[in-house]
Image (cartoon, rainbow, N blue to C red; front, side, top):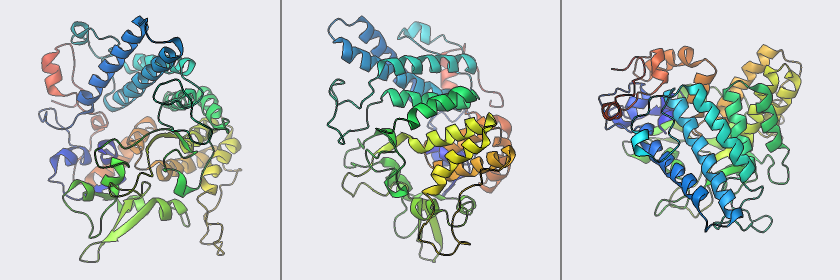
Length: 420
């Protein structure tokens, strides 16, 4: 939610809600230590993962197949956590043990080295994880067609590697890793738009079931789905889609029809909201929170191919996603969404990719925020978007501030440039 608020896809109903508005208006400051900070949330998870790695490596009571898979999960998760830290803060301390004396005196590691560790962890995970989705015992496979896509697999590690390589502009390895996942047709295939976010969809590479008491579905669905009457001050009514974003959808793109919806308030004002997840806590379990999915792999491979001057092949990948967004029953060609021409220039293909990424990945794990930064668009886009949100933009704000109390505790830490 916070990373998505930082970008330009969402609107916040009440800017007085400072926990949200500090991210929404790109106005984070270090003196407000009660503001939710990923730094303080993620590092305890990393400590737990490091503890698991140490414990498993020293264990003589865990059987070899179970140990291998659990180690694979741990390395995978450590890479996952550091990916979001390094893309939120830049250089971050690289804690790889449970020694709190060492950890409490770590300085910030250059992001290039953090990425090296992320890639190393994912390669280890890829070697150790199972090809198949496993049950809770980390050993038993599911009957065919009944897989719970909850535990990461070798394909999950490959999919995340593809994303990491893309962020590092390692186009060849990004294409190779994404292709490995796409070619795994026994497990994955594109689905209709309405099936993408259903639990255990064939598009889902890694997902998490609802774990909140009283909500068998996703918390994200509860937060994003506006209720009758329009937005308000409570959490499940406070966010909606920016009209500027809604206007981005091209004519006939069924992602607008199927992945967004709208409600009207008492004044007949219409508000659009993200409707990828359609179930709330009041509904029977039908959706899992999707973390990695096949659609992103097509986007990754498309970009990697276009950047390597394989433009037609990259456009073919984009057309896989565009094809399922076409209403085949629409008789009016002027109203019908269309495939891209494979003869587009490299520049035009990259421009088309920007559109596809935004409308395909909106409201998924802050993808838009991180995408603007990695592609160098953040200043051009946010200098206008932040003003519309009631804030002011400066380039340093693309990095969140290190919590001030962390610097007080560990004097070897430094603050991001631009923050007091």
